[in-house]
Every structure is written in C-alpha cells, then in structure tokens.
Image (cartoon, rainbow, N blue to C red; front, top):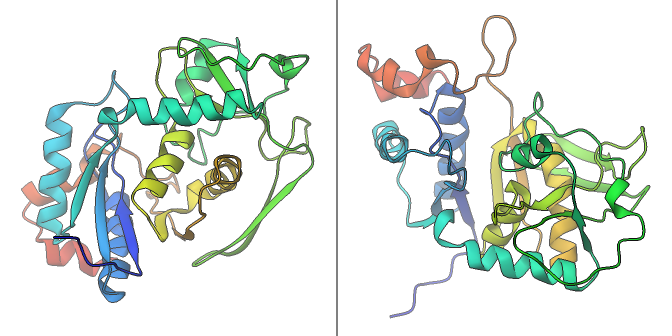
Length: 273
C-alpha cells in the first residue's frame, strides 16, 4: 500500500563517530518538534561514510540516546549503502563539465568527508587544478571538485537566522572556493552525499546547527548543478562550553550517555533547551 504524502519531511543526520552531546540533542529535538508540529514525517540518516571513525557501538548509542530523549522517526537510511548512487551524481557533474579532477593534498581530501563546521571549514581553494582541465571522463579512484561560479553570491533566507549571503570563487574575498565532491578512495564528500540524500528523501526542511550555514550555500550550488530541489533551511544556535567553544564530541562529560548515567532524566535535559 502506498504511503500517504506529507507536505513536511524532515531529517536527523547524526554520524556514528562518537557519542551525541547536548548540542546534538537540542538540534535534533528542534528538528523533531518542527516535524511533529507540521504533522510531517521524519527520517533518521546514519551518516556512516567515515570508515575510519564510524563505529557500530556509536551507531547503537546514538539510536539509544535519541529514543531516551523522546525522539521518534518514521524511516531510516544508511549512507554506506548508497555509494553507487553518489557515484552516479559525481559522474554526472564530471561528464557535464561542472566538476574537475583534483590532485591536491591528502589532508584536504580527508577533511571533505566531514561536515565543515565553523572551526574546521576547508580553506578557499585557489583553483590550481581547474586550469585547462577539460577531461570529462569520471574515475572513481580520483578526487574531484565542483567548479563554482567566480564572484557569484549565493543568497537564501534561513528560517531561524534570517537572510544569508556567501561569495563563491577562488580569490581572497570569497567565502569558499571549488569544493570537493569526490575522494580518490571512492567515497563522496559530505556536501555531495548530503545533497543527494536530501533530494532522495524528499526533505522539505533541513534543521541543523548554525555552523553549517556556509555548507548550505555550497549545497545550493550542487542542487542547481544536479537539477535537484532546494529545501527550506533552519539553522539552530550553537551550544557552547564555559569558554565559548562550540560543543563537540570531544566534550565527553556532556555526552547524553554520561548525563543519563549521572542520573539526569530526559525531561531535565529537554527543559534546558
């Protein structure tokens, strides 16, 4: 029997590379509340493409933490099962001349697997491999970058942060340059996998942290290049520690598992949001 259509589709997108912390909890709770208020559906997307850091025990823990927090979802998707689909998207970009082979450093390529947060964003690429690169044959064992339009401003209105504008290009004034879409180890970048999955899941609103606002500009360019729809965006404020540093998985003392084991209830956690 076909599933009923919903006008609102949201998603939770944790990566099983560590324990979820309070910052994750608040963002995921916001995503759950917005989907529930709209009478919509919610996906859980297991972003397990980082083969070196993703662990089964973290995948199990994140599901346990979400259920304990009171979050339920309707469907699940695992990125590691969808690599051929990402490859097809990358090949489309290369064969149409919208992406090109890159032979730059291994460090840059490793960074492309993870969501580029405010304190880990990849540097503006200088376009070195872009010059005279007209090859249109895709090789899954090579790295590729999207050829961004120099000097173009990508603008959107965020549901929480308001009007946003970012400059694409390869000069010092740009907010970001030609970014990686495919790694030479045969895996997509975070940006490409995210865009392909959001479209496949028919996501209508992406709820995530404000440190990913610049990623949204990149993803809008990818959506245009692949002919995919652009969902609405809602970027939540970040939670920080006493020193003002964004909470991350290195903050083990603030993990949901540790807080639960300390005797706190899910209701007490949610009351702090």
